[in-house]
Image (cartoon, rainbow, N blue to C red; front, top):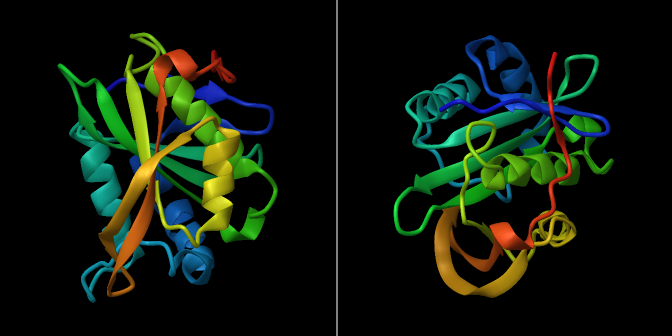
Length: 191
């Protein structure tokens, strides 16, 4: 899947690549406590290298689109994903995101999700030309709900016990955004 990198005010949002392993693992390790209440359960033997391998495998096969939001100094500030991409009659996917705890609270997740939506809704070949992007967020995850709101997602419903998180089935607020509701924010990177 060809995805053209995007520039925002402070970030380069680009596809995950094999060279990102060390920075990915470092960011996940630094963010483990912040992410623990919100991340789906993984096998006990799964470390951050395992997680990187899963992310890369999904991206490289085209089943999903895994992007990183890179700061000018090379630090990975956020991770944004388009998962479960369905072509044909729905042209849709599910979005997910997380921020590096070392730079959290500075709006990087919102900026990165805006660029992610530009990729999702942008016409081919620079974008994926999708019609709908959905997201599910636990009601207690106020920071992520704020990101969704700032990026124009609207609440569509509520799903009791949707995903197993930290060993328990957790409720999720269901949100979505349509292509016609989105205004492009980032610019295609020409460097």
